[in-house]
Each structure stands twice: as structure tokens, then as C-alpha cells.
Length: 538
Ligand code: C2O
Ligand code: CU
Ligand code: CU
Image 1 (cartoon, rainbow, N blue to C red):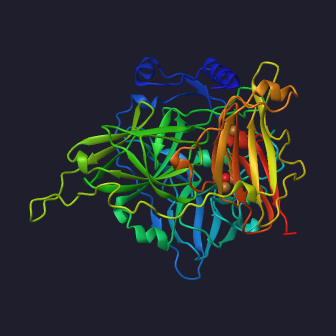
Image 2: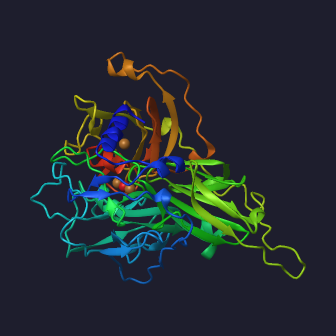
Image 3: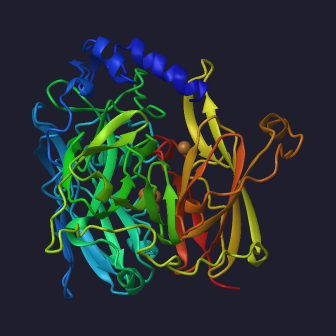
């Protein structure tokens, strides 16, 4: 945790909010008043005091667009129960449930989606009018959907300024000329998307292709989407988004919510058969990182990352997912028949799997003898590592944080430039570039590029002090080797503090204006987001 973040949390506690970090702690903490958007004191819910595993994991509605018609997705206000013992919560959604519909797509088959803004005229979370692109002269509620991970022409990519107000709609064309992957649609409206996504504007799209089909991975009810995120609630079940307490500037640099939700429920359960499952996991939180593991010696077999399949299954005991990262996992429950096993985030059980008894076949043998990795080909797809010498340009991009006199974080930027400054990154179409992110802050930033998929090259520790004092770049160690589950195609990369993280990417697809940004939504909105423009080939 950075110094500024620690100070921020202290401020928050001083303002009367208490943050449970473990069961023991939370039980000692009494509900305390906090200040909501309406600036009235609220009493906060402590989710660890709720009985866990009483709600079934919701499965988002699956929609498969067919024919030439556009799929119609309506943003609206809904009320939904996040837990059996919590009153219904006001949220915004792309559908009738807390997480929007699961859209199924096919590689190479274009899709049209009509995004309809039927949200109310007023926001119910604390809008910060002082942020860039967020002035009082604009409609208070603005939305624009972005299909994260998709290669889309710029006019349909959900550029932050392309928002539209309640009563309006936009039809977007998605070519989907790319390989199978776990995509994510979410709001991207300038200055508001951290609030809009917190309110609930997100959903998953699964893009499939023939290579994936040929692997025979678990499908249908054996493939479970898991959208993970965190929220704060008041005891009456309403969403609470923390504010800084600074008059006129409610923006906070980041926070961990008290409750962890999966597909809309706090600590749900799911009944599974003692066999192999495929879990499509997305970190859809504003700023929380998840540290996932399974109990009882169960392991994940990771088969895919942000941009689709890895070259083969990778056994993973602990999985660290930053905001916007996705993991495609297999879990074999055949050894846990009749037991309850939990998915954990750190030490906390966040999802209970109730594993049934094996169905007996005529021969008296269990049919669920799915053994990994023997059942699957060792190689899913050739993963050709992009040759570094193919890069024609190397761009050095610093990650910076500005503090005020008290050491509070006021602003995060890329390359010491703000969003509205002129474009400085202009890669040529079909050229390959190396981007190195020089992290001068004390936080890990998950950096995401629109349009492209990339490979992570390496991470290397360097002397931050020397760098900041114009003494040049001094590496402190050899480059770190990547884990096997980071060797696939990505669109979001964790950039740890004190390190230079390098990626390599080919700017394929379209010319035009795109953007890259930190996917901690609070950072992105103030102002860790920059445009880049793909220009025509020489
Ligand atoms: Cu998840 Cu700019 O995107
Ligand atoms: Cu994106
Ligand atoms: Cu960041």
C-alpha cells in the first residue's frame, strides 16, 4: 500500500468509516456513520457479519445474437438483492439482473449492438464535477459502452467523449475479427465511468472460435462465468461510494469495498457435479486486486488469459487478478465429491462449491474421471513470441502520481501529461512497438491498451530515486522471468512499483484515435488515461 493510500484510509476512518480486513476485526467493529452522496450520515453494512453461502450464485442470462438485427441492450435502474438478509439495492444494469447478459459471439461473425440509455436523469453516486470532462453544464448522467478486449473501429470503441444521455441510444458495429477470448463490456463515459461501473454497468461477452471448439473444454452448465467485484453498502442495502471529504472534490484515489460480490451476490454458493468445470473469471472491481486460490489442495488449471487461450494448460495454485484482467480456468471437482470447497480471496472464502456425489454408471464406476492435464492436448495453440527486433519504435511511458502538501494523492498521470493534452503516441498501422512503463509511484497499475493485444516482455527493478533525480536509468537486477500464465496474449498488464514493465504489440486493425489507461477506475478518471492515434502506414 502506498503512503498516500494509507493516509487516505486513515482519513476515511477518521471520517467514521471502518474497514474490516478479517473476520475477527469486523466482529469488533460496530456500524459507524458515513457520509453518502446526499451528505447525510449513513450506517455502514459489515458484510462479514452476514451469514455466508445462503444465496445461489446467479447465472447471467445468455444471449446469442442471430441474424442481421442488432442486439438491443438497455441500461436501466434496477433493484436487486445482494444477500438474503440485506434489503434490495438500487443499481444500474445493462439488463434486468446485477451483471448484464452474457453475450455469446463467434470469431469473424460481426455483431451489432444497440446500446440504449434508459437511465434516470440524476446520478445517485457522488459525481465529482471538478474532474476533466465532468462539468455541471453537461447532462448529469452520461454513458457509453466499451467492449474491452475487442478490436473495434474507433467510432464504435466507446471513446470517453462519445457518451450519450438518457433517452438516447447508439448502435455499434463489432467486427469480432479476432480469436476466442473473454471480453468485457462496461461503461466508459468521461469522468463518470468509475461511478457507472460501480452502479453496475458491466457484463461479459464470450467470443468463441473453431480452435476452442476442437478442444472440447467443459461447456453449457459446466462453464460458469464469475464476475468478481467489491462494494460498500449502508445497512439499508444501498451502495455507498467513498468520498474524500474535500469540499467540491469528492474523488478518492482508490479503495477496497467491504463486501465481495460474484455475479451480484455477496459470498454465494453454487452446486457442482464431481467433474471438470470451466470458470470464466473477470476482475470487474474498480480498484481491488484479487488473490484467488482453492481450498483442499484443489488447483486451477489456467487455460486462457485476457486475450484467449494460452499455448496449453498451466497449473496455478494462487492467481492474482488486477482490475480488468480475466482468467479462463479449469477445476476438477472429481476428487471432492460430497464436500464443500471454497474459492478464497486471500484468507476469505468468497464462493462455496457444493460438490455432489458421483452419478453411478452401470459398471459401478464414476463417470467423472476427468483427469488433468492428460485429457487435453498439451498444446492449445502455437504461441509465437513476438521477436523484439521486429519493433520499430520503443516508447518510454512514466506512471506518475501527484501529491498535495499533506501527501494526499491528487492526480495520477501517464508521462506527466493529462488526458486533454495533444496526442503524443502515434504508432503506424501494422507496425510493432515496445512500450515500457516506468512506474514511479508506490502502487501497482494495471495498464490497458484499447484496440490491440500484446505480449508482456519482462519486468525489471530499477533505481526510482536516481531516475527521478535525472541520474538516468539504473537497473537493480536482471529482468524477471514471466510466469507461464502470463506468456499468452494480454490487453491489461500489471505494472508493479519500482519496476519497468515492457510489452510488445503490433498495431493491427484500424487507424484512428484510441486510448490507453490504468484500469484502476479512480486513477483512470483523474487522469491516468491518454489517447494514442494509429496513423496510416508509411
Ligand atoms: Cu476496460 Cu478503456 O477499458
Ligand atoms: Cu478496453
Ligand atoms: Cu493506476
